[in-house]
Image (tube, rainbow, N blue to C red; front, side):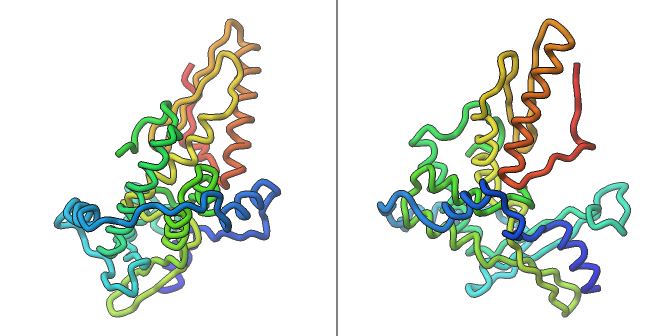
Length: 264
């Protein structure tokens, strides 16, 4: 059973191997390990913590609660409809977070959203996920973007610590099967949409050719291209897709061809 769970989680939660970093990846990793803004954010207030705790949804399935394991999520694997149960990609991972982890996750998310909004850094062409998640978000790129946004030092370091040393645990009767998680966000976390928005915003900021613009909704990206002839449409589309591919490579993302559509 353990070998099966490890095979599934290895496919769902990929490793972060710096061995294959490009030059731009090295820049992100370097920025993730330093900070630009040395100022301190204000401490979390009692009313802020109380408000977050009271806002948590009731009657949700519990995680592996305990102060020492608040970075350890309980993993539940749901078989997708019509999928081959022998395929690792046939399972949808649900990570049930400990209660204390949920509180910190939401506190951090609110503070970072406030910081980004106050600086006007959230792109207006991003729809959805404004005040479920993503298994492949690369943490150094997120920390790098927080650094570029001049996130206060203590908030930056707390967020960095929150992302580190995480794992998921699958319970099989009395057996616990755990795996260290090196990238991605727990399904259902508050921070997952925030982290994705930060990365998606970088795509929206790209220089698009005339006759082309991009919009995003959650984790879907739409490229709208207009032109008077087939050749013009093809040329603009190829430039735009090249830009998008370079963005994906920088943030270690991959497109799913089976979910990519062309609508004339």
